[in-house]
Amino acid sequence: MHRHQTVLLFGPPGSGKGTQGRILGDIPGYYHCACGDVFRRLDPNTELGQTFLSYSSRGELVPDEVTVKIWHAHIKKVEAVGAYKSHSDLLILDGIPRNVEQAKLLDEELEVLRLINLACPDEEAMIERLRRRALKENRADDAKEDVIRHRWDVYRAETQHVLDHYPAEMISEVNAQNSPAEVLRDVLDIVIPIQTAHYRRLAAEGQTA
Ligand code: AMP
View 1 (cartoon, protein in one colour):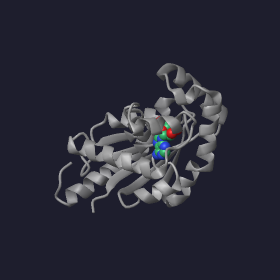
View 2: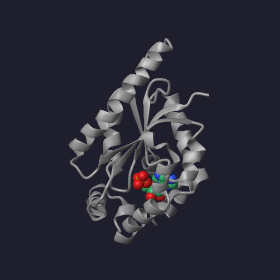
View 3: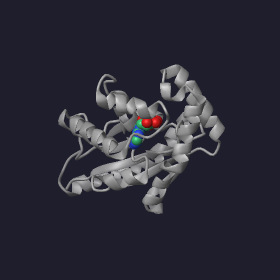
């Protein structure tokens, strides 16, 4: 079975996964998928849309089975319309897997080539970033101080353990508190060799990117 050639963008809320992912996604050969964006695009008048809002407004994770199902349907859709070329693009995943159970559910489908950990030693600085973003992007889940703090609690309690699911040599750490351009440089230093190796593998198999 074909597994998605994947780079995971990992880090706590506010670490810049979305910013970095969106930039990479604009470069040919990379496809960026942010799980939170997939959820936010659900119609709020549907049952699934309501389920998402009931969890996200409290800073809680949507249950794993529903999350993986929605993610899967989204990937199939973008593959079908040709936006994501799964045989040649690197899949840049952001916001999923969010706990060990999701990581296990996705093991069969993802070939994780690297996990980039956007590390944030200063939690308060990241929380301030989220507050500013909430004002700019009108994001309900980050508008309230207690919800932001709860998102960090969930990160510590559940998401952080995803790091133990993957072998240490697969993990690269980047300091997320540098400027976005510096973080981008560090991220590119990691992903460019991965993309080059991926293209070499495709060429060796007689396929073109
Ligand atoms: P994000 O934009 O990644 O911070 O996600 C916003 C909200 O969407 C989260 O607080 C969760 O409620 C939900 N969400 C996003 N990704 C996941 C996931 N992989 N598992 C469960 N819930 C998620």
